[in-house]
Image (cartoon, rainbow, N blue to C red):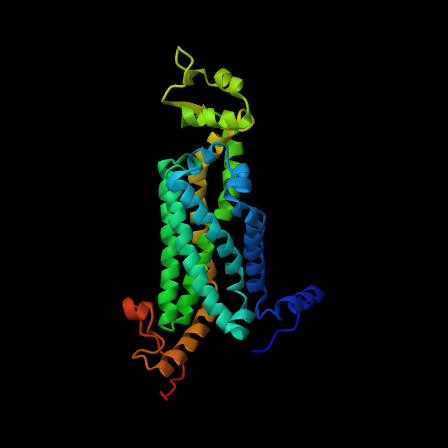
Length: 335
C-alpha cells in the first residue's frame, strides 16, 4: 500500500501522529480520537466513583441514593461502577491498530477482560433499573435494550473470533463499542432536555413522599420540605405513605431538579440508542474495503485451520442467509 502525497502541511504533520499508532487512514484516526477522547473524558472524572459511599454518593442525582444505599440495588450499583469504569478505559486500547499488530497477546487478553466486565456491568445495571432516574417504564426498558444490544454484540464478536471470522469480529466489536458509548451522549441529551422542559413547563414526575423527605434531609432543609410539599403531610404532621406529582423544573428545590432529570433520562437513552445505532451502521457501510480485506485474512486463517468453508466459516450472510457464496479473488491451497 502506498500513501498519497499529503495535501498540505497539516496532513503531513497529523500523519506523523497516527501512522506510528498503526492507522492507515486519517478518518479512522479521527473517529478513534473523537470517540476515544469522549470516552476518556467521561471515564476519568468518574474514577473517584470507586468510593461508592463517598464520592459517588455525593455526586448522584437528587434522590438517587435513597434507593441505592442498601439492599440489592447497593450491590447492583457497586457491580456496575467497579466494572463499567475500567471497561471504558480498556475499550479505547482495543481499537489501536498497533496493539493488534504488535501486542496481539494483550489484545486477546484485553478482549476477554472487556467481555467479562461488560457482562458484570450489565447485570449491575439491570439490578438498579427499577428505580434508576425515577424508574419509569421507558427507562427500565431502555436499560434492558441497551444491555441486550451490548451483550449480544459482544457475544457475536466472541463467536466470530472463535471461528476466525475476523471481519465479523471487527464489525460486532465496533457495534458493541458504539452502543456502549451511548451513555456519554445520553448525559448531553438529558441535560439539554431538562433545560427545554423547564422552559416549557407542565412536566411532572410521580415521587414517593419518603423519597422527597430524604432529599430535603440531605439538603438540611426540613422546613423547606413542609413548605414546598405540604401534600406529603397528614393532619397530625406525619409524612404520609403516598406519592405526589413533583414538577420537573431546574432551579427550584433539589426534588424538582431530580424530577426534571428523571423525566428526561429514558427519552435520552432511546434517542441516544437511535443516534448511535444509525451512526455505527453508516460507518460500517462506508468502509466495505476494510471488511473485505479482513475477510481475505479470515479466509487464509480458516483455510490453514482446516475449516470446510474458508472465508465463510463464521456468522456470514452467505452461510446463514441468502447472499451469494463469497469467493476469494485468488484461491489458495490447503497446507
